[in-house]
Image (cartoon, rainbow, N blue to C red; front, side, top):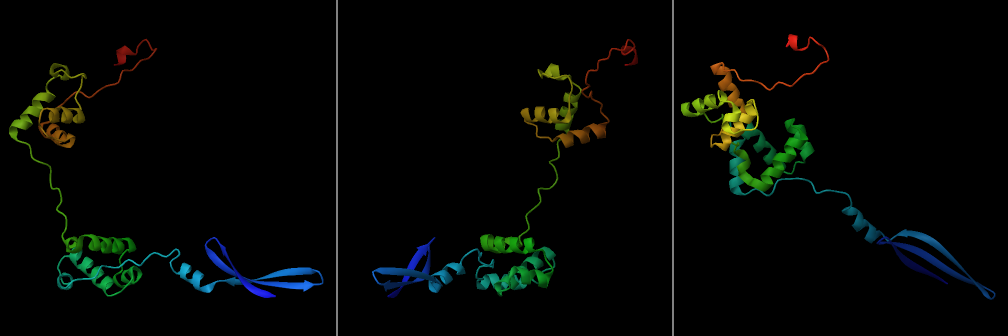
Length: 211
């Protein structure tokens, strides 16, 4: 007697041929492996370990019009992004776009992801924060006044100013100024302020004479 048995192992199904043969009073059983159930395993393997290819979302008529216009833009920032979006929308993979435009793989992937998230806003360059706020003459005079005042007179628990300390003290008094701006004031006005000195000790009898 022979029949096919299907076993499930780790969510996969496999076929075995079972044969039973009677010899006298005894029945011998044999088993032969026939392989996996193809239809189930094939379906499982299709989605195993593969990520979907990154491509741009479907472009609207407005998107297409702006992308075509941006390809002829004078600024390379806009032009490069438009070329990447157009090639991706035509079905090109990231690898193919890199080969055609000689761009880095990370750059191409980043621009496609940003377009899918933000749309046409990726063609707008972010404004730079610009230069530091200029301080007024009154604020400048206040900084110089503090520099020429011993910190203890201002109820501070240290003996010498530093650019960072003065910047923090100024912020506490509603004056926004960075340590680098304070450094420029010191340099322009040729101001001198005491830098913190570490104490030194020696067993040499003439040590204090050399200081």
